[in-house]
Image (tube, rainbow, N blue to C red):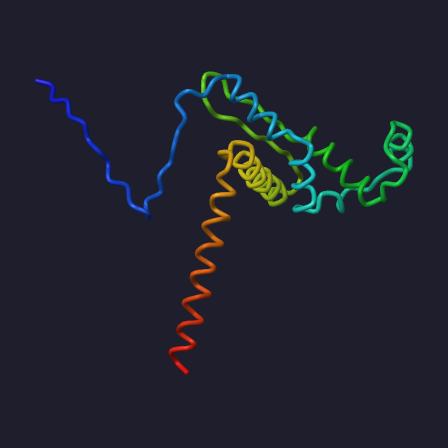
Length: 166
């Protein structure tokens, strides 16, 4: 005998609830891969991890970048960041795993600590970008309005408390 019931799970504010999208398509997964490979994400990782400070630039690569149409007014530091981001993009392997909803990230370095730091930064900046891209329209405005209302309420309550205490 099979007993089928509907159970309504009780979810509290302290529980770590994860939402899994069941309807994720291959196209959705490929979009996430592109977010992970995006130039701005690579530049943020480079700046956070200091990769642009570790790589020495050759005279030839500087000349080639300038001839390739890079604006002359870019500083040497900006060029280093761009080159390091481009190099990171080449060194970082981002690929969806077949028949899953998972994406595999691989980054090689002689220093295992650096590899871990870079991968952690990639994931952190990806999550920020993912949330920004998939944020509901108007959600930020709603929370800013709520924050302002509560801030005003707190200010009023503090003023009344100070008035009461004097």
